[in-house]
Image (cartoon, rainbow, N blue to C red; front, top):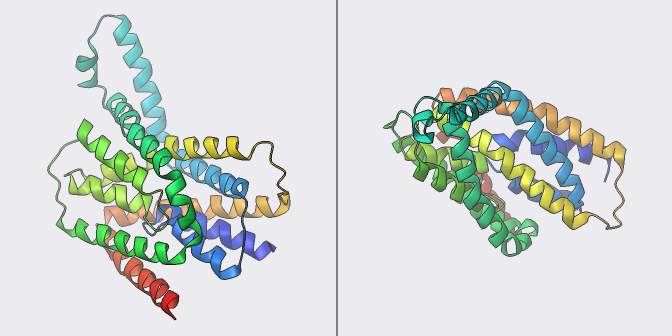
Length: 272
């Protein structure tokens, strides 16, 4: 791998992790184009950069959740009921939904891991998945806000969608924000929940993959790793801010055109 490859991998990971176009799908296509064989540990470091971006961008929400949880524990000690507390402590309720949504994500992620693994070297499968992502994004034009907040069933369905997005070409951010909007959630709430839900999902996946590579003799060029990490960090932050603007502008479905075009080109290339 050359330095330019490390920069490109970091940039692509950073931008496409949050824009609704599938980072894993783009990395598969990029690695296929350049003939790269990227070690799993390399991907782990890029995902750590992804988590840092979320924590920095949504630090206020995370602090609010931690403060709310502290108040919740205090009120519980004072004898207040959990349901009564959740009626006033919305950040604690959001934390509960993050836990609830993470359960199906973990189950589906582990169940599909061996099945999905071969798809990371199959551009044709990525092309089909990109078309599916385009369709998911397109139907958001039918979404309308019908709820003030979200429910347990919303959390579970979004968690299921996040688990399915392990398939390269299925956008995690795009698919779970879309399903939240189609469930009647406010688009900004759906996006905020999607970003916060990604933290345990990415950390869990990274921790699992780390256990798989521990003890293995894999050479990693720390210079290239650092370049990719910084590129992913910088462009990831720009990307997450850009997506937040897009969400506010109600233009998420515009990315369906890009997914349809790229997916079609990948499939056409595979036929030639």
